[in-house]
Length: 330
Image 1 (cartoon, rainbow, N blue to C red):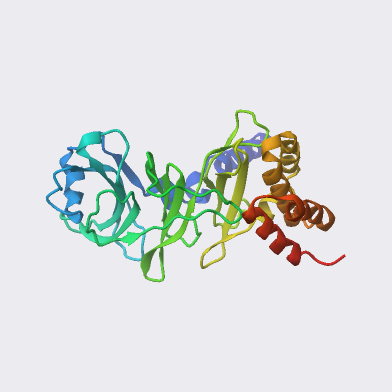
Image 2 (cartoon, rainbow, N blue to C red):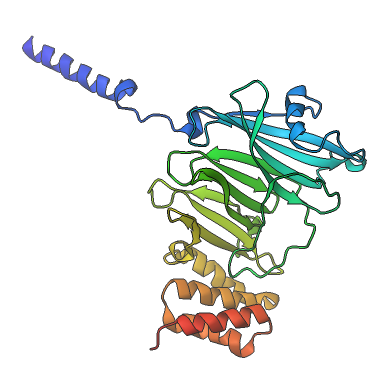
């Protein structure tokens, strides 16, 4: 009888340990528990239109304002929640085609019934329809070692955002995705700032198979802050190069060494690209760059020196020369 009682108590203890989430479960992160998203299916939705007051009103005759989505959560150091709103400016001639001429990200106070602007960011502007809107403009740039120029007046046909604590400081940040760009807006030192903005392309991997690299955030080292993976298309055959950024407590800095140093699969993929005639120069450059990140001095020197000696593209030659100067003498 005593053994039976002991077994019963042991079984009950194990059951309580396995099924007791109220005591031991980690709290839900703000990303999961405290964010409410709303997507506007109707551009004439009165709730979406109340945010148009932060753009020139009335709308210019040839333009049309469209609120795409909003999210509500606490994203700064105040106890109240904020509303993040994505708005686009369309032309009435090409309405609903996705060829927007401007896009804005509004951060508003939700404490009162009437929204009050906390900040407003201009995500892009084709320059075809100037509007006088007091806002912070976001300037996008290529990642280092990516030399493909983006055309002026570049149009984006996709826009979305997510609220997630990317920097690991306990405050939600705004991850913004455009068709060919990514931006991060964060509350830092008492204000909302654009802390990261890069052009990006969903690029085929260098194996030429149907696999693609997409922009994403991932905590590779489980330190509580996310690394940003930003892909680019760097050659006629859509060879893909991934740039990795990590948060250093103040800003996002490039750390490709963390991404390429031990990834043998990526190196093998790049080595295979050398068989394509129209990609020899970029392949040699980026293979040399991978060896540079892996601290393989002889092979880095071999590939980068071949660019200096035989290359035709100024950007590749100049950068290869700069990298060669940083290699230790043998």
